[in-house]
Length: 269
Ligand SMILES: NC(=O)c1ccc[n+]([C@@H]2O[C@H](COP(=O)([O-])OP(=O)(O)OC[C@H]3O[C@@H](n4cnc5c(N)ncnc54)[C@H](OP(=O)(O)O)[C@@H]3O)[C@@H](O)[C@H]2O)c1
Image (cartoon, rainbow, N blue to C red):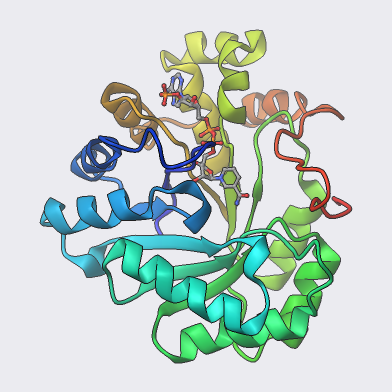
């Protein structure tokens, strides 16, 4: 799984999706080889089209998609996996995630059986879960007939994820960090700005570097702008000091979480 990914999440419906293929095409051209999509984002079709048009061999791309929380019953789940592959016009994804835990008391064992089945049928190479708390993650690992290999959760300097990070390291799982730029909120932070000035880097680069210097953490920033996509990709030629890392960790605040939909958020750790 490449250490840095590209997010394609959008909020809304499928009305303004025309032209989104160009966004993904430029990300692939810049060099991103890890793309994060979901059935819920309406971007699967654009992502699949851009991958096929890019000329990049399919095996060089790590592609993630997700089954939405409304479809966690076994039959629904299988149908949605097929629908995602049809949207993508691809035979398989590299990582298939449960997008959110069930708000409707669908037994986790039923969903985990369906998730494992998708892997056994070759529809995904790896499986995992998103937005699960530690107890749910451990339960998923216990119930799933195939290994759970990824947890995707929100993570940026405003959100303390110490407990979740300790858990994924103990379980030896990569943790994909969504909203790595705090959906843009971090970009006006004075402390990050000061570190960025001292380093001769941008605020986004400092934030993403902070993620990359933490074991197991895989940020997936989104940008629709090719210049900012390139900026976010060029984060491998500098290092933050221990002191700078500490200053960024110290920005965590109790109200730092962005994604907390009512009715389906678990008790976060
Ligand atoms: N599993 C889940 O439940 C879940 C939830 C949320 C997100 N995700 C995934 O995580 C991905 C990333 O999270 P996100 O999209 O919510 O937020 P994000 O990546 O933290 O922030 C994206 C925002 O930052 C701006 N931006 C990006 N790079 C920038 C730069 N260098 N300078 C200035 N502004 C910049 C973008 O605007 P421009 O486009 O104008 O550059 C956009 O408004 C999503 O796309 C999705 O794939 C998953």
